[in-house]
Length: 211
Image (tube, rainbow, N blue to C red; front, side, top):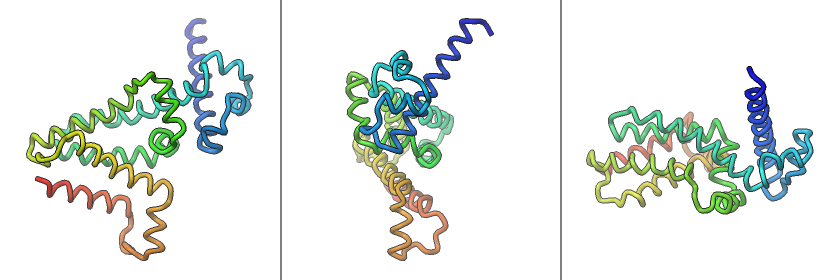
């Protein structure tokens, strides 16, 4: 490994260290309560070092969104090899749930926390390619299903929002513990091993009937 390559690797490693620390603090203390100074203290560097790589907290938040959507986008893109459009849509739902459960910190930053969203809007200069790409994958999946005879009477963009909103609601309720609490305290679905999966499968059955 040459000198330039070592420098590049050191730079990328340090940027990732900063992002990991920021993500941890955003989740622990909240976005507003997390400062560049706190992030620097978390990794035992000076704030000046962080400013060498990120101009402010908003840019760090934007970079985290990019990282999270890159992971989600890669996982969703793999599913394009599934020829049957409805089976592909089902698989997208499963991947989305798996991403939420396995990357709960990213999911919260991307879809639940309000504060970073405004900074992403400002930092990205109204251009949010990562999020747009993920939605385009869903929209194209809905349109392919319509070509196969499913939910033809629905506006594809609006219906895509309905599907996404339902999946997001399930994932958010699960991550925050509300889904399990409702089951436990309302004494419902007591014979169901996985309420999230069971509810998802019920949603899929509803979609199947829209043909």
